[in-house]
Length: 258
Image 1 (cartoon, rainbow, N blue to C red):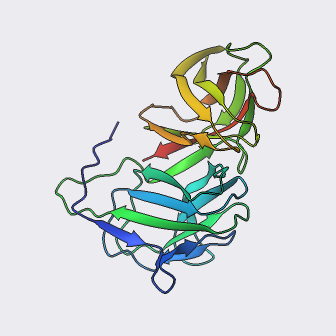
Image 2: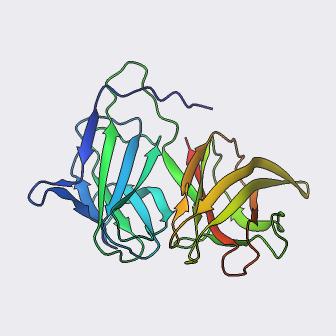
């Protein structure tokens, strides 16, 4: 696995709006953040910030000409802030962006006053390299696959199929969402691969917590797990509640394709 992403010499920012002293408003149509990057990026950091409660949504980051964009991050889930206070969602993404790339961003559903910014890790150091060319999504766009912990408190529920991957992965993001408005629920998440009818756990007991509103933390976790092409992927969870509306998570995986 290639996770040799060094510290950048500096960052190249995309998405600021100097006329309004803020970042770029995100909509359901692609908005250009950068017409042509000045540097090659071995990865980047995406920051989404809001002052208000919005709907659960997802975001797509793409490269290429207008009306011909290719998603390098495809509809990664993002829960609302669940609060009237300012809040931000941050993801560090080791996906390479070539020099001269046009970068555009969109979200899946309307979210009032949601602003986005990208900080490219400028490849100013010798030996800089990226983990992935793009991220392949497995799971339902916009909501994730609904996984139910079941009616037994603090006990793993049954396995739920997330789907299968087309490409081999050298790492992945586990991406979670909760549409329930309850508070104070804790989860443990297992991700498994089907091997000859037996589930082999590649991510055991990932801790996820849900606070006010439907905010889930962490919402996307990068992990160095090798997944062969054509694998059947599954998830199961346990929860600190048996309330049927609060014991579920929406789960997607985003695999790093080299």
